[in-house]
Amino acid sequence: MLSKNQLGFLYMFLSVCAFSIMDIIVKWSENYPLGEVLFFRGFFGLIFYFLIMPKGRIKNFYYTKRAGLHFLRCFFGLIALLAIFTALRNLPLATVVSISFAAPIFTTIFSIFFLGEKVGFFRWLAVFVGFIGIIIITEPGFSSLNIFYIYPIIFCLGLSYVAIAIRQLSTTEPVWLISLNFSAAITLAGLFTIPFGWIMPGIKDLFLLSLIGIFGGVANLWLSQSYKFSEVSLVTPLKYLGLVFAIFFGFIIWNEIPTFKTVFGALLVIASSIIIFRREIILKKQLSIPRND
Image (cartoon, rainbow, N blue to C red; front, side):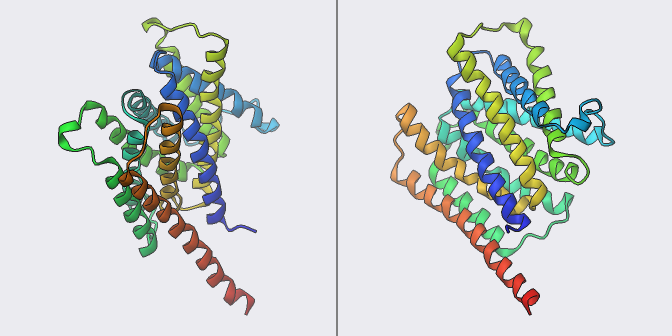
């Protein structure tokens, strides 16, 4: 049997995989209006959550006593989503993913103040090692900075608060409701952009655009499950693996050849995740000894 933290680790890994696929399709969809892509992200994710909703909640699925916190989660989540979609369309995939990994720094700090979590040495070490790897990979330089580099930072701030809000909501709310409300908010926001112009997609593009919602919906559900089972500061550094996926797909699809520094930085990113998982296994063994005695 896996511990709760290990289950959270597994769900986060699945979430990272799904989000990576979604990012690739979003980058591909640059010829379509951002609001239209946003609609597909929300609508097809919305359908998914209705399918997994418990039958007993079909008539009152919207019921909640924490509407205010749901609103904040959706608001900051929408800001984060708009920011990352904009960045993906205007910056290289690996660059966007690299900068977005500043989020664990903010999340770790937020989790201490909002959740009262205790962050140990090894978790701080994992965050530090991963962040050093990101610095080595990006190395943008002041001369190459442009306005679009701000968007991944906005994404980091929004996502950090979302992580805290999900953790708080999951103590009383089912994960499907947390994710369903977010997908509904995205869908409505996308619909409001119709007057600004949409492009009718063909069958193939329609299928790919729908995958944005499907993968985004599944990834969001797994993300919520991860934060429910584990401390935010424990599982968040695993998102660094998304950088490895970005480098791989950037090379395969867009012929982006990583430099030696990029490869070395990616190895540090992987090392940070291994530190976290190995530490959790050791802690589990240590905790099991007194029980056996």
